Length: 388
Image (cartoon, rainbow, N blue to C red; front, top):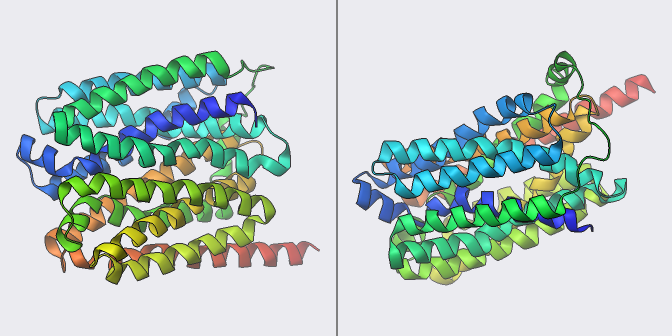
């Protein structure tokens, strides 16, 4: 794999840390800013909604820029947003800083996915995407536990200062290693890009992404209180367990990419089946310490095994004309799922059966994504038979 692909991985790492680091800091942020834990959890929802709104807007605004220039502009926005988060005196300003940072997220991964697949032969496209997304998984493996430790040792603001430093490093690496566009990229007319979004198969792919990740983040957003209140771990033990979760993310992400290269449809259905089963099994596992550690690894692996198949499904159905906008919108769909999941988990805690029921209710969400995947493949099969 070319070095430029690993430069994208570094950028993905920086963005991944700022998205997920808040989950290891919920208790500290809630106490310092005098809000409840579910309210602090909305910082995850706000970020995800910022990605959902920002991805299509920034993709359209930057569509005529060279892709390398776009990536650098987005990384600068990301870094400035984290500086604002580090100095935020109130919850409202912190939420605003999260929204600013989120603007860069969707378009970075959308454009980055197109750059990644352009760097490798066709049979390695899904693996190239999974390698770029390895930065996101490494952010959880290394960045989030480190951020949680920083929050305990030096206060939650120190974690955001550290993430801003990561952003500066990522900017430099991208500037040095990502090649300039070999030829001028002439985007398709906007009407053609938007026409792609009207295709039922593209819409089904986006819906699968929302639901596939919605259940994951209903659990993951509240992993700190789940581990401390259900499994009985101390707050200091959360960081090492997040390392285990992150190791699962890395393993699942790479395995999902290889699986999708061998057979995209089989990987799409198989990873969603696996995710549903793992989430259902975690209902009981989170009530014991050994089971919680095992569930953390398996949940991470099953969750990120779906990333490459879901992203490649949308790209394959969009075709050439609308891939740029469709790619960014699918990243936005991941984050809409994150927002929905964070809201769902908070609602179950605050108004429903409580924290212990979160994994059970969350398992129904990827199950519905699996139903959409079966429907999508069935419709595709019928269409191919009718044209044969």
